[in-house]
Image 1 (cartoon, rainbow, N blue to C red):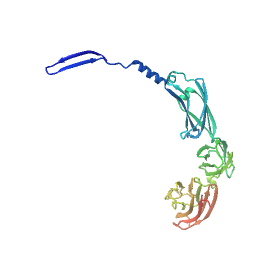
Image 2 (spheres, rainbow, N blue to C red; image 1 turned 135 degrees about the vertical axis):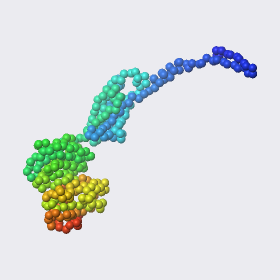
Image 3 (tube, helix red, strand yellow; image 1 turned 120 degrees about the vertical axis):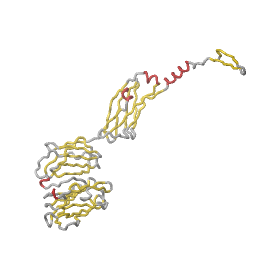
Image 4 (cartoon, rainbow, N blue to C red; image 1 turned 90 degrees about the horizontal axis):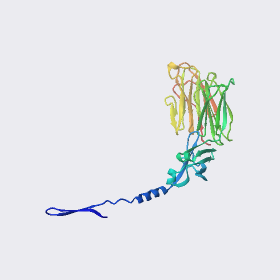
Length: 363
């Protein structure tokens, strides 16, 4: 490197030398070479496919995804499986960066998805769309249509405005019957070993709960629910796996009680409790207040899902308002099976054991 100028100067004691040099410039050809190298770096052109359940948008793992594509005059076929997040990624090709930035993205891609529990699904896209965002594949489970007919159990009349609910395989579907008494459900997936729970509700009629164990895929196609009017003796309150309903004909205050497998008691002072993770409820409590006395009262306890174990049904004559001996009817319903207990109670403030039973435990 050459000096452009040199200056000498001194003072009385020292002499100084200042040398000016010309600054070296970085060679331009090195920049050009590095830029060329960057543009020649290979870049993967990738696309993602995500498999989702059409009913609830849940990610589907282990779905087999195949793609056929034509990309810049190149035709190929790839396959892969989705992970726990429902996503699988494909490398369509590898191009230098300059082609990625300045080249044309042309071609078509066909995506086909398969899964053992779902119907096959396919979709078409342009390569440009496939590269720019994740392609969502919505899978549907195979199913059959199911028709529920609701009728009055005494008159045979078709019932409208009945809320019908289906519960199966983790899904819940709800319809309201039309004037024809019919609620139609589309593509209901019923497999052998599944349980189908059908519920029918209306404030004027006894609630119905029916459980069906599926033995053949797709059954049943049609089911009829007979509903008893409350005015004609129907039971009030909700229904579950285990239910107990109390009826009597006086303004006296009776109380139904249920001892659970956890040795706790569902009754008017503890209307809701949890046992083994399941909830029992007293959803009807009658004649507790003198201002709201009924001449045909009912009380009801139910477990939507009941814990296994020993249960005990108790009846308490809490307060006498009219009769010395009060006739009663207690109905125990376990799934679709009913057991009826009748009698008269006269002793105040002392719970009377009506029944003891075991639920859900194998012999």
